[in-house]
Every structure is written in C-alpha cells, then in structure tokens.
Image (cartoon, rainbow over all chains, first blue to last red; front, side, top):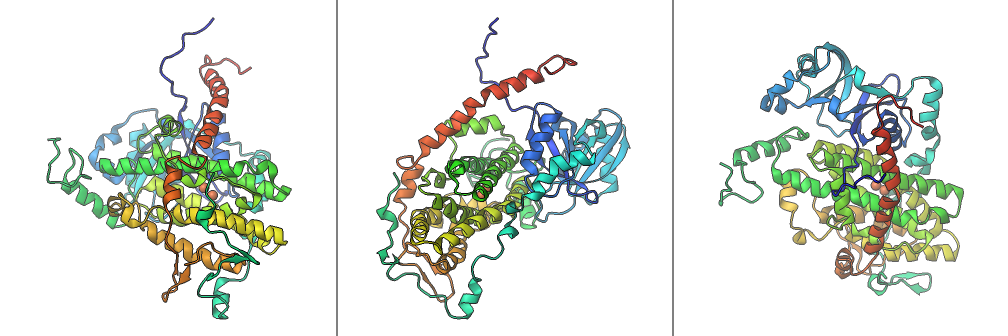
Length: 211
Length: 325
Ligand SMILES: [Fe+2]
Ligand SMILES: [Fe+2]
C-alpha cells in the first residue's frame, strides 16, 4: 500500500497561469500578474483572492503560461524563430504593451486574429501594432473565464465594492492639514527640547530594548 | 570567449561585453522598462532576484506581527480593517513572488531560502507588537516608510517589479491611513489612550527610521543599483522624505518624537539625531527580536498546509474523466 517516498522534496508549485482582468464592460482585459494553480477553477478562485480584493472587476480570465507566447522588439531581433512557433490553428487573442509609463498591467488585450498557430498570431500582432513595446498572444480555446451571468458577477466581485474601508478615501482628511499649521505659524521648528508626555519625560529609544 | 577580462568592472559578468552594458544602460537612461525576454546583465538579474524575493518575504512575514491582533481587535470595524490589511500583505507577497519568478527563480526555491534563513526579510517585522496601539503605529510608520520606498521602486527599470509596486502602492495608502486615523484618535482620547499611542511611538519611531536601510556611506550595492535604475534614490534620501512627512503629522497629533535632537533646518528638512544602529544590527543578526519565532510560525503554516497541497496534487493527477469525489 505504501508508495516509495521520493527522496527529493518535489515541486509543489503547480502550473503558472497568467491572469487577465476586466474592470468594466467598457474596458479591455489587462494582464495583471500570475497565480499558481492545479486546475482552471483553482486558478480563477486564486486570481480573485490575489487580484480583486478591491472594487473594479467584472470578469477574470486565466491562461496557462505554456499557452502564451510573448515577445519584445528586442526578442524579435535576437530570436526571430519565435514567429515560427507552431501550434493549434484558430482564434488568438492579442495583447500589446503601449507605453513605458508606470502601470499596473503588462499588456491590454486589443483584439483577436485568426491564425495558423501562435507564431503566426504573434506575427500578425506585430504587423497590426508595429510600435508596440511587447506583444502577447494565446488561443481563445486555452482561456478559462469566470461566468458572465449577472448572478455570478455579483457574487464574485460585488463583495469587494462594499468594503469601502479598503479605500483610503474612506478615512478622509485626518487632522488639520500640516500646510495650514505652517501658514498660521503654529508649527514649531524644533520638536522637543524636553521630550515629554504630559508630565512624564518621554522614554528614549535606547532605554527600552527589544526583548 | 567567456573568460572574465580582469580590467572590466565586476558587474560585467563573464561573456558580457562593455558594449552590451552600454546599450542596456542607454535603454534605462531613456526611460525604457526592461521586460523578462530582454537582454540583461547577469548581475542585474541576480540583484533583482535578491531584492524582489526579500521584498516578497517581508510582505509575507509582515502579516505575522499584525495577524496576532486580529482576534484581539477592540471593535468589529477595527477587526475587518485589520483582516483586510493582512490579506493585502499576503497579496503583496504573491505579486512580488510572481515578479521574481519572471527572472527564472521558482517559488519553491524562494520559500526554501526563507525557511532555511538563507534569504533575508525586513527586520522591522522581528519587533514585537506589545499593545493594540502598536497596530495603529505600525500602519502609520512602518507602512508609511514602506510606501516611500515602494513609490521609488514603482519607477524602477524592471517592468514586472515596477508593476507590482504600482499595484502595491495603491493599496498601501489604505494601510497608512487606517493606522494614522487610529493613532490620531488615541492621541486625542483618554490619558491612558494617549499614553498607549505615545508608548507605541517610542517603540516604533527608531525602528521605522532604521528600516529604510543603513546610511548611504554603509550601503554596498547602491552604485550598481542606481546605475541600472533599480534604486532611484538613496536610503538617506528616502529616509528624509519619510521624516519630513511624518514628523509634522505626529506633532500635530500631539505626540512627542523620541529624538531630542529632531529639528527643522533652514531648508525645511527635519533633521534627526544620531541613529543608534546597534539594535538594528542585533535584530538583523537574530541576537535580539523575534526572528526565530517568525520563521517557526511560517514553517508551521507550511507544514500545516501540506495536506492541502497533497490533496490538490492527487486531484490534479487523477485519470482524465474521473469525477472529483
Ligand atoms: Fe504590503
Ligand atoms: Fe502594508
């Protein structure tokens, strides 16, 4: 009954899935990061817990890393073979990176192409968006998605919207603005010639060592 | 071809050329982000793996001092806020492990390095949280200091790290605000509450000032890290930003900063007194603080979660078409 135990600690990472999030029906899906998961349901639940602890999501897609092909302009030069990668023919989603500005997302999905394989899809993406800073393609058949029916969207994503205490705006402005104090001359220039709390002298940091 | 050339600086690894480095540095100087498939110096990759995995571990271990207080929170409101904050820190760890993975290290290797204490994490999380007021003070000062560092890193040259940081910063502002709100209320409360807030400030002020790292003169990696756009500011610059923001606000709250030398100079910068680093280094070396306890807690979580991983693996390995039962 007992199976021989492997001597090496074995890899329990599970496959990596790239996560695409749509903030609203009008917005594109965006590549926001990845999760490790054993199967599609696990990938989507983990993606929600990791990436949707805040409002703004109506749908998540997860795609196994192995099903995604990406390239940067530099890679197209250094490894042009990437355009020859073969695979299943069909509909491929296309994502592009548009700017070097600070962003939370790698690429936005901008459309889909019919292609003979991932390399062909990447080539078409490159032709359609020659100025992009990176291209990403994956077959539509490879994606798993959260259910679009309103009940599921509600139960998956609405709880986050109600938790307004996760937004800094919830706390408003705390205390008077420091600038206000400065203008009115109430902000002292020196903190504490004689540090004290009420009548008690303040404890100096090196008098209270960590246990 | 792959021999090191003795007259090249040591950040140029074997097999790399000064021309490759010059082109790489020109990209960074032009404000381009480096993406996983791009050419990068081996040393850039090594330094990033070190920094990002350390950072991920800090987020994960950072859950422990505050997590202890979830069951002791005084109100339902404070409990839900604290739970959300601790959940966020777990998420931050996930974003960062992901960013490190894009450089070719596995999550297993990183977790192994943490549990065997080969990898470091911010020693700030090895200080004890003594009273409930510490939860507020940690939010205000520790998350406040972390935000200064993370805002800088959001502009760093490595795409996946930068993106993780932008996402993290947008969430950290809540951690900072809830802590500040709590402490400002305590500072206006009963004498006991005010004393709790002051005691917490006395405990956390210097560790928070120190967590932004050694003085620039004692920080060995700064040269390469700034040349490659990983660190856009020095430790002392980030520390000054942190102090300039927090000193006036703490004073406004009616609290006393436990630094008798703290004063504002003619340029408006708040200048701290000499920093006593002995405790900082003692905590980093594990001679003081809760380093052993933190890793033991993390190890216990790993061990207690083993059955979940095993069950999921058995489920994944089931023959195709077999029902889950
Ligand atoms: Fe965090
Ligand atoms: Fe935080």
